[in-house]
Length: 108
Image (cartoon, rainbow, N blue to C red; front, side, top):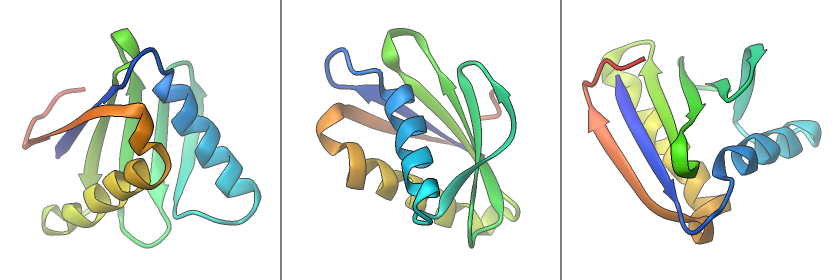
């Protein structure tokens, strides 16, 4: 499992921006990361259209977003991590101060 910690630049509500962008892309039939599972306040579970596994997003204090990336097979997890970081860079690079990757951290 890989933990991706995303720190916003300034006072951006980054979690809300991520959720809204995924919804916008899904509604027009674009994007590869899509929400799955029940709705929970401050939490989302995304799955990729091609890569097996999931990404759990959680809103944190100070606007920080924590994403747990779990590939179906550990050797394939890098594809989900790359896809998620690419999504962040493509749509939110001006809204993000830092992205930190932690490998093998089992935190829920």
